[in-house]
Amino acid sequence: MVGLTGVGGGSLMTPILVLIFGQSPAVAVGTDLVFSATTKIAATASFGYSRRIDWRIVGRLALGSIPGAAAIICWFWMTRHTPGVIEHAIARALAVILAIAAVAMLLQYPLRRVGLRFTSVWLERAERFTLPLTVVTGLLLGVAVTLTSVGAGALGVVALLALYPLRLTGDRLVATDIAHAVPVTAIAGATHAMLGHVDLHVLAFLLAGSIPGVLMASRATVRLPAPLTNTLVAIMLAFVSKRMLFGN
Image (tube, rainbow, N blue to C red; front, side, top):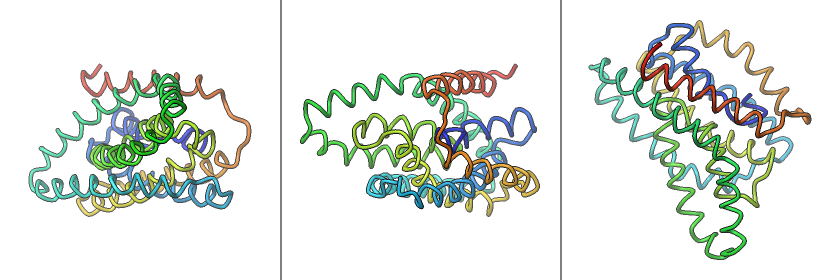
């Protein structure tokens, strides 16, 4: 899923760890962040070899995402002696961000059309606004990913489609989004590991399957129709969000 669409790391794995495997929200987020970072390093190496990453956009996103991640890390560290507060905040934030991600995926192509129309009419002004909007998008993604492990794929792909409708298409979109996620998930994952929020046993089994999977997918040329994939993932995220908020 990550190799083909850029989506499926935090948005699917974290709820699976909580709802199916019974992990606590904090441990699920921490384990998934280390899992995502390792998987996306492998995918980035594959995409980078074929020169499909737009490193300029990655840098713009990182200008916002690294400070955003640092802010949440500071909050984690200040509240590390009250784990109940962290657990509650993560559980609620996870449910909300999953719902936002579901809506964003359903609106992915309408947002791209809006971006195309704005870019075609106001080409010079669009570039002027795109830089600060990209940095702000990175900031929001950094906060979301560090707090819930969700956002790097589901929200990142949608945001990049709206901001760069002409510059990023197909595999370049997915490759750029995955490359940006690497430093954020790595920093956040390391912090969660220091706080004891990583299940190494579960992590080892996840990586045994995910690394071969993402390498094969990132090299694949035959894909499911993107609208079908996005709709199915959005429905799943909406269902999981409801379960996280209200239980059964």
